[in-house]
Image: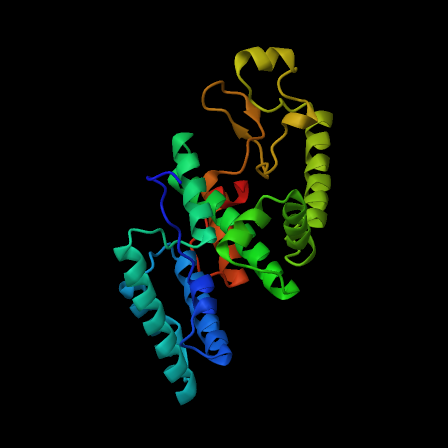
Length: 271
């Protein structure tokens, strides 16, 4: 084995192999630790006492708990922190596969010069894929150690299943009828402009000449302004796109109506 290769530790495997705990205690520990891992990964926090304290305060104490739950979960977290301390002393990598996938995607994006928010978005999708595959393995009774999960992630069939799950369960398809209807409506606006002989979309000089002043439907604005306005550079009256602030303001209103408690910008729609 390469002397420089990092040893990877998996708390799930080590918990399963523990001889000091009964099977029922192991199951209880796994529930709490899986909850903690998912919580900290969503927040991009490192494993350790600090994130454990935050988890305890923000999630465990979020609502009243039974005494037996707190006793078992406290024991589970203590076991995990002892395990973590040992792994760190051994110089090993304690990150679960989901976290390693996220970090790898982030690094690859950085090498390509992608913006930080874009890297986080891509890494988030990859992490959700890894989590989905782990959950699928667990539900089917298959082995779901980090090593098993790493192999499963490379299976194209599982990637297809994940995409199908997004479409069927998450209802991503969050939009196709509405988009089709919107395109029908703006097509009428475009045709009305052509009938009235309104100059087309403003394009760079070469394209402007080639495409007959942007009158082609393919170049029409997806969010056209409701009224014509004068181009300050050319002095030509034509239809422009919605002003950026109008668009942003409506995005903010939609976020409030949807009850989303996270910061959402128009850039999110790109993904």
